[in-house]
Amino acid sequence: METGSHSDLKDCVLTRPQVKLVQDVAFPDWVADNWSLVETFQAKAGDLLIATYPKAGIELLEKMESPRTVKTHLPFQLVPKSFWEQDCKVIVVARNAKDNAVSYFHFHRMCQDMPHPGTWQEFLRNFMEGQVSWGSWYDHAKGWWEAKEKHRILFLFYEDMKENPRREIQKVARFMGKVLEDDVLEKIVHLSSFKVMKDNPMANYITLPSNIMDQSISSFMRIGEVGDWKTHFTVAENERFDEHYERQMAPCSVRFRQELGPGREGSGELRINS
Image (cartoon, rainbow, N blue to C red; front, side, top):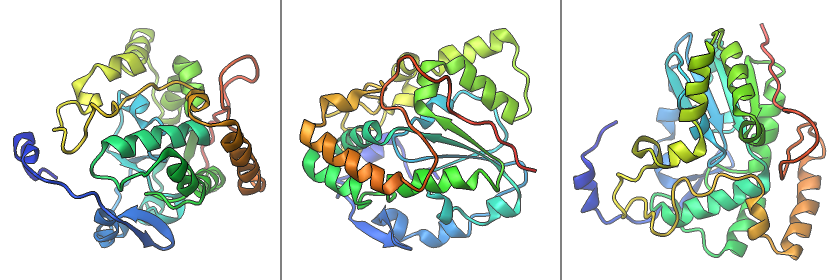
């Protein structure tokens, strides 16, 4: 919904939001205070829902042609029921927890529409405890991974998309029932690359005024690499995080890569339940 031009927004003095709980999930107050609009949203047959935890790589799907597309950061249990009643397809993009935490921290630093992150140490603790906007990364990943057994969900991994974007885009095309000619596929691969999108004003939010997104603090599209967490986590933080991660994710079969290299091929699954 358009509420004004960028020049209007430039003169606004924004106060960072507080965190409020909705069904035990943390949200910025501007989401929580308008929750009725979320839960009563009416999906249409044929809608495509793209779901990610914040800063998990949704931008890499922006160039795919699709029917009406709805993007969300909601955990599975809070998605409006109309999407399941209409049997909508869903594409989930998930990113390993450590890189996601780092990227989300820097997003909080530069985006005035998010609660203040505090220090990296404070933010990491809150991230691990699920006390950040949009809730627990663990619950988000586990919920969507398990939901693919019952719904028409394609679960993709950010790391696979970075490793072999051509392969992952083909998965999306097959999931959507499309056949992409080679020239179209290569164009999508090019336009959805991190480097191209980082320089694209339609994707990098550079046109927003600095009192909304201060990109002198951190770019909206900052690095986009797998393994950047190594430049932020201390040895002690990494050990503590790994122990906590194992406890949280033990019941779930989903497996993430924290760096790229030799090993398994793409881990995303193409599953279409009828």
